Length: 564
Image 1 (cartoon, rainbow, N blue to C red):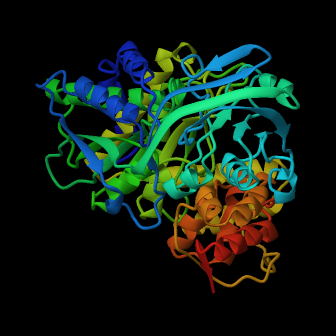
Image 2: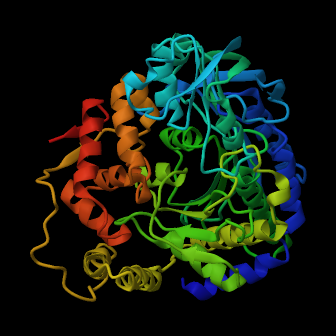
């Protein structure tokens, strides 16, 4: 099956995909404060379920699931039940409240307050000695919240306030602690956020803060599955979006939810009308809490052959907001889902989108870690990413329509079976090599033109350098987890967590997210030396072997990685 089949599916589906129907789904989802482990997440799942079931004549089977913590893999993060009723921050006679700034309370903050104390800023957030002045005070920091929270509480601080200097000055950031219940309750201090303009006034002042919340046991993970059954034994395709996020969370990721729901409705209507025949394989639409939900579905034995992850697709480019990006699976996994999305976007005539190297940080990681090729459609950068200003007025209904139509056409084409991605593999590897060459990175260009193409079953364009050696004397590495979350390291040992965060923050996360991509490559059978070559081929020769090795040593000390 070739690109022309994707174009035909796109044309057939075009009249069924409705921009403003998708936009209304987005607006409904943004009403819920859908933090993982919270009642609002369940409400959002139920609201979308009602929308999908509103037309019982469609060939769409809808099931709501709730995965218990015991059904998750042993290495999956354990997130506590959490409910927040209120939060407040008062300084110089002015007060900020949760109802006006839904991200004011850090996700999973312990209850606490009212606390009134002097605010002291900690800039060297990784250094325990920097918290010596924290006792009896409120710590203000822009450092990673899990490390700062743990070290501040250990030093006797009364509360923590975090801010993000990269956000526009009036935006309150979304920060989540994502620590286990014992770590949260053991710390026992409230954790809040502040805009960067407010943070500039807080140091040395007296502030009054509090969080009204409750923490329970390990959360059950609700997720929604909608199925278009196939008529044969073709490939089974999953179209995924994460539904969790603080209110409003319009682009991240009510936009992905809206696009997936619209893709499900449009495909169902096209099949019901006879405009398209039922595909050979099943198409399953998954709306999940990020990572936890997709891992729950996969660990329970859900069969999937390809996955399309739709995450942040609603903001038009301009004014600091970037284009849509198509991120393929890491090699040596197949390129079929990326190829199908690529040809769908081409057929639609979509504007402002780019084809990129693989990247991590969303639910496609879980599928790739299980050996299932998964591609992501994602808009980046996003001016108000992870902030209370990520509202529905930023969203373009037409951008939602483009994402929904591309996802629907790609999923349908893949589910028909026989999709050939070899032409895309040739185009993609040439593009990566040409980009490196254009930037003067000839080593990465040669690796992309040789090693990368060989991994995809193509003839190399040129020979790799025969004397190439990594900068560190590595052997093999065996990863215990494909999803290495720094918060888990921090919960075990805050000093190790601080070390890992410093390494990630000093440039490593520019080409890989939380070491997930190297972990996935290792689980697919590549040794560390091979991982380094592939990382350089994909992301450039600036990938530093020494720094990556330093991060792996920290993870080894924490028990997340076993080095042989």
